Amino acid sequence: MKKSFIKISWPNNIETYASEGDDWFLTAEKAGIEIPTGCLTGSCGACEIDVNGETVRACVTNIKSEKEKNLNVSLTTDPFWEN
Ligand code: FES
Image 1 (tube, rainbow, N blue to C red):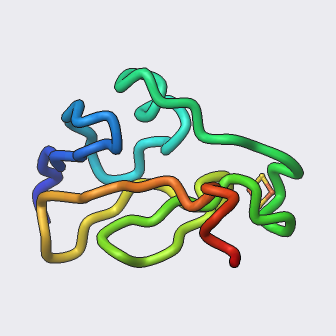
Image 2 (image 1 turned 30 degrees about the horizontal axis):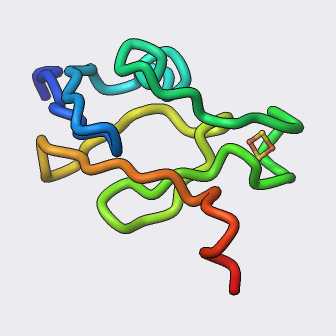
């Protein structure tokens, strides 16, 4: 299957393009977004983001797009979210 560019919409209304397998942190940086980090091993959850409504741990997941070519990202670290 051919690799294609994936359009990512960030919470600050910036859109960037990425390829399958790209790193979430570097791609977020290009959009001026800093994804928080903690353990970097997938256990603390500090780096969680929502990708098309699905929670993803950015430190252990690369960008992938199975069907959709547009990914909407939001940060899940809003302190009010947990209430
Ligand atoms: S930084 Fe801890 S789960 Fe990603």
